Length: 282
Image (cartoon, rainbow, N blue to C red):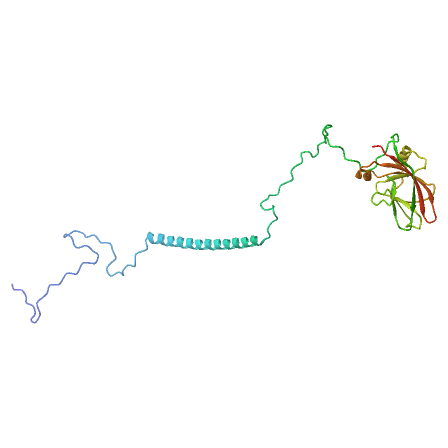
């Protein structure tokens, strides 16, 4: 039997090509063997994006951040150091402008005064090496039994007193107008009446013209009169006067006990005194 012929005018037949295998699939294997699918995007799927950043990039960014912070801190430290240096310069200029301390005071540290090892201790005296006691400057009570030595007797002093013209009398000698060494002073400045005043350190008592020095010492001890008052000069009055111990010590002399009696007062204030002096025993 003959094969049927194609219609006239038709070209020769071309065998049809086999369809291409699916994208991503493995090539065909042996006949009858099942082919394993290949992973990957299906054919025609959109292209995948850029790969995700790996761990290395994050570490680099962190290092850069730490470096930036370190730079900022360094700049801040530099600024603080510059400010402190400026303050130090200002303080140095201020100190340089201050006045210099007094000589010997620079570098000296205050020290507490050294304790006195003898403070509170009882004073001791070596009989063989001790210093002589200081001379007394005030009149101590005299022993009525003391032995007095006559120095001068019944000396007459005529003292003319005029107004406030003060006349100073030294009873140790005796002598008138003894500036700086007077034991008594006379003036008539109050009411025109002649009055007597005692010098510093002199003590006295009202007595009698015939009194002994021992009796005067006892009278002064128990009946001394104020030495800061003035006493009017009246005929017949008598005084026991013990001169200044300080004044006697200053001139290297002995103290005197003097009995002074007012023997006359004229109308024009001519005062007549009679004095007898004794050396006070040491």
